[in-house]
Length: 274
Image (tube, rainbow, N blue to C red; front, side):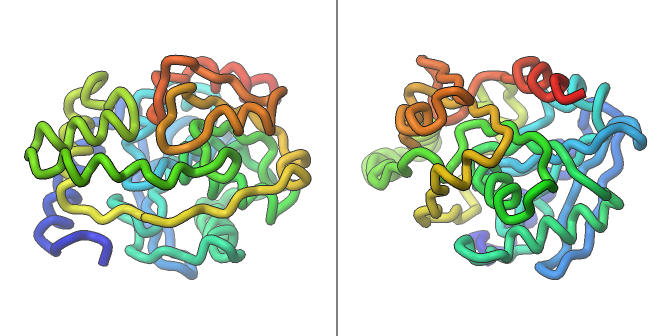
């Protein structure tokens, strides 16, 4: 179990369900059976529209997309997927990263959703890594892939959590300062309810502490990518990402790891496919 206690897990899930009830457009919420365990998915938009799969970041949930789905679901059948082993409602397992495990899991998710053929994907941070890994391992399955602060391209910074040693003993203030230092502007500074939820997750959940595999230039060259990174990202080397993918990457110079809203930017790029 990746929660610090069963009571903490229950508190997080209770608040998560309450926030999911505020999803801004009509939606279907369900558990999709997979070989790795049940996977929670929020689906919205016209049932006959092209499928758009959303993969959130580490230590987060599908609430990451709550401010995007109103616009995206006009054009697409949007499926926001809770990653395995994170604080959402999917199974508490963490497949091996340097293996086919995540790709096999996504195969099962797409099959369970009734999706045939190729999809569009948007991935943030760890979700960007999982989406990229899937697109590489399953050629032709991902038509276009938008990546927000993605792992697996620029170097992952190893000393990022060191300030927590000094700040976390200062209670809520220390937690907020640590989160701002690591991630940049917080959701709480844009949307208070999801910001409070992020603090609750931080209190009760144990995030991953692993180095993610880096994709090769040859692997990335075969994908149709748009990448958006923050110039002040303290978790990932966004400048290296831009150097490796100069024609696909947009650098927001004053942004951290958590980016300001990219709803329209991503949508306009996706719509070029139609």
